[in-house]
Length: 383
Image 1: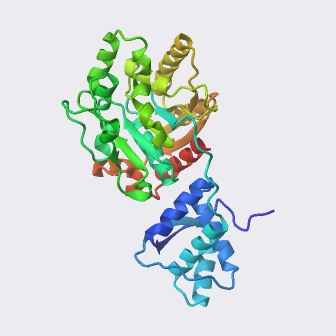
Image 2: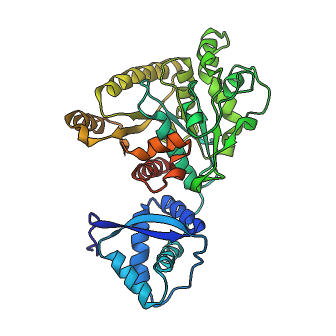
Image 3: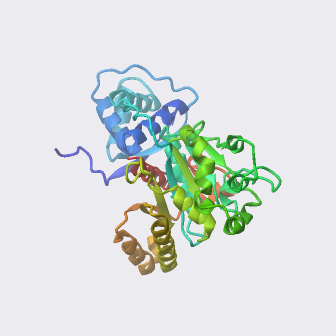
């Protein structure tokens, strides 16, 4: 069957839509593994053919943008005019019609193994682990998945980039819980991340100013296997509270990283590819060298502890084809690996602006190209 519009020939459209309708569209599209522009295209195409549709409350609308196939925008405006309604009302009815025709899928059966665990790691700094892990966590929460985002890097970039303060040295922290030096409930440290369509489903466990001591203290402990199991023991009680736990790891290969890798292993009662490590890289050679060292660490850990750690895939971050052969040939190398490339995040200003403003990207610029790629990555992970 031939599509009525060429998917490669699209034009940007902007409308004013109520927040609840925008949020419902994003969540439903994510649940059904659809791009938002595909959902809106289907809704508009179908709505134009209808004789009538109930009105939609568009009060309190805010800006919403997407891309429609060339020619469909004019048809939408013409059809709206013929029905004596505003263009914004026509767009709102189209989206409402698509939502009604594509109900939310049934909830998945209750988990028996707790949250799925996503470890974002790479020995090389500066590849964008923080921005990628934060963006994927926001996208998963947009899809309706309760998500805990853990700043496991002593530098605390994730905590500060989202506009929060690092925990003070004398305060309880994840590190102190891992070392048995804190008695308070770990949940008391969780901070709800506000803004965007992920609100009420996304929490942050901030970094602490004493987290740099964790590696040294783990190295000197005499407790049997505490080095590898420390993170899992602390998080075990909260796993049933979440669908996903996302760990932003430090750029190192020390004991702290071992605890994160062990935490992301495939458990005996867990289906394959549900948890594991995601490796943000850049399209240049040093990322490849860093990955080789990380792969060796994972192999040694798996051999020593007789466990399996799944590499869920790579995310090529800060990609810019204008860098020429270095970028394009490196991207081809990543795409030739056995593990999949989950997404290619372009080098654009929106992420840097969000960091500067200390806001989550999917709240600051929810419709930018980087945000769309991060949503696509989250959909692949969610399955």
